[in-house]
Length: 291
Image 1 (cartoon, rainbow, N blue to C red):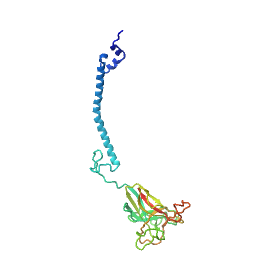
Image 2 (image 1 turned 180 degrees about the vertical axis):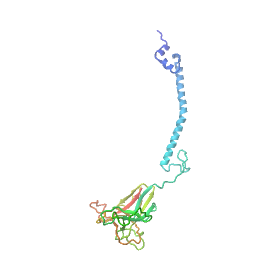
Image 3 (image 1 turned 90 degrees about the vertical axis):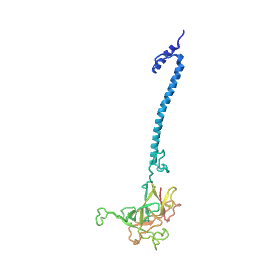
Image 4 (image 1 turned 120 degrees about the vertical axis):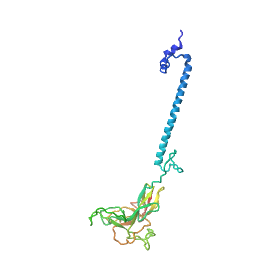
């Protein structure tokens, strides 16, 4: 019994699928190779045409996206623009901007009325604090300005609340502090008022006072070093520890012993502190570092 190839093709369901492609007449096996080749070539040509149309659009879109990302990076990360012609990477023109000098860190330099060459002096003044014989009041030292002091509806006379006093050095021996910045004929700062300055250092984000050290950790910048000082251990007023510059200044003409807040050198006590690095009776040093 002879069965035609046309019937086999029709029986296997190829005709309906080909009809969906617009081929209405029955598919014949004899022309199958050429028809399949035509369909294959047409599909490839169609894909190439689609790619030819879409690829430029994709390229343009990706280029725009890359440019936007580059611009955003230049805004967030200073220094990525072209340093020669003032353009951002990718060719987009950018106006050259100076470094933002408002970014920085603030610290107090105790014992000096000015800051170092690397820092700006926001203001200078004198150190204040609570009286050494009072039970209450503030426990921290304050840097009080001498210029531009402002009041707001003050009431005359003491209201007997909290008090602010000036602060005096209580170092009655030579050899600890450098005398170069104290003034002529002064060998130690005993009873003199303590100056201070509030300093701003640009492009820094942190500062730290390290007791018992004169140098800073790797990567940190040294602002100044000196001695750790605080109130007397037997006084009623409890004071915090501050780092006083090793080359301190004095407020000239303030050597009268009027007391108030006082500053003493801090001595290590081994036993409670580890004996080895710390030696009882040795005066502790300190350093202020910025990063």
